[in-house]
Image (cartoon, rainbow, N blue to C red; front, side, top):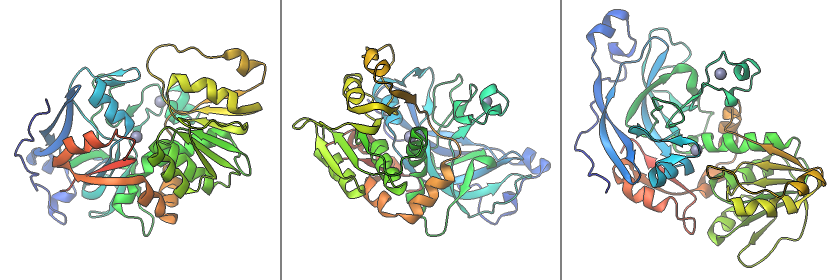
Length: 374
Ligand SMILES: [Zn+2]
Ligand SMILES: [Zn+2]
């Protein structure tokens, strides 16, 4: 059973404009941590709003008063199963990696940001010195710390909290006109833009997006933006397909009732359902590209591999994102309807139980947001 929210309220220990906003070594010793509230997953179906310490920012860090958080499929997996893919929960962890907020306090050495500024938080902290980081494939960093991820021990706490401290290098300023509420979609849109980049040049190509969950939908938005030709979307839920149509899909099929007969230059598999992979392979034209963005459950799955070989399909994985974050923010500012179409509903953080109950219901929900300041 989810525990009742604890009555702790955010402690306004740091006020914008106070002398504590820039820390000195001496003030570090004098200013103790204070308490904030965080949404902590303890075990499957055991999600609690717990008091959490809020440390003053170290020299290269920034304290952010959180504004909005998007609930992601991985958050839902931690909630439902206590893990996602190979990341298994061994200890309580703060969820959330699609987050935005305003700067509350700056560490001593931080430049280029100011207190009160609106920011989106890049959830990734690559190590900077492994072979993948050296090759500038930082999303593949073998020592990655990613907000709200149990991939490593100890786990990396996430951003569903009233306030948090992050590295200044993780902050991205919002382009003019973009709201904090829209900005929390930059993370999943970055995933979508990276998946599209993995397909190469999509201009005038025919593309099928298999699966119209939030990532599939954002891929549709990105494909439209990048000038793809015919964009066909499949899903099992009419609600999701209506969202895809509004985002600019050329044609949608509910595969409960109708089968797609065409073949496509590019196939983006965004369901992560093993049974859907043979259809994705069959719908990719000879010599075409299949980008696998959906994350399959742990373990091996059967694949009709001969159809990949003798039709010379290019089967490409895609994982998270790296430098796409600013492009995602810019696209959200340029096309505000993306957020309007994606966001189904928002809940105050204290109503997390209702938010996590609605979010997985694909018949009526695309992206669900938590308001982290109310
Ligand atoms: Zn996400
Ligand atoms: Zn690395």
